[in-house]
Image (cartoon, rainbow, N blue to C red; front, side, top):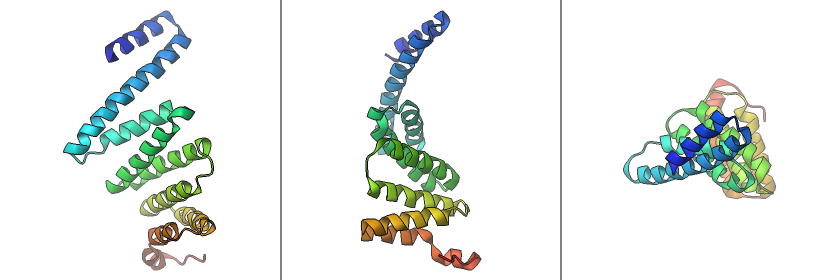
Amino acid sequence: DLALAAHQLVVARALGAERQLAVERVGARALFIRVLEDAEALEAHSTGDNQAVTELAHHWLAAARPSDATKALFYARRAGDAALAAFAPLDAVRWYTQAIELHARHTQNDDRAHCELLTALGTAQRQGGLPEHRDTLREAGRLALRLADRDLLINVALSRDAGFDDMTEVDPN
């Protein structure tokens, strides 16, 4: 199936059929994503390598249509988590930012998930030394308070790591 899809892409490009190429590209990407998901499932049992998760996030985000948004959001969040675990906070910032943008476009009123993503983004920003982490975490805290969700509020408070912030500068809020 992958060879056939690749062949159809080459033929479409050679004929200059731009529209056909776009259709085939979507089909090939869907097939590629399925192959990656199978590889990721196998990898989950054998290694701690997060490369498959990152690849899946990249391809799901590129192929994201409203029907794909849930999977794209899932893998973008996992890629951010994997980047944080690999001590790559700036990569995590990129993944979480994309997840938040996708969440805003494709989900309806899931404030809890939005708060979790903001908390993850703020944590990555803080670990990456980005000063905007304070605003991000304040926004997450306000949302947790509005939701009256104690667990979310605790996660936001723990992610602020106030002990380290206090040593460098005072946060007036």
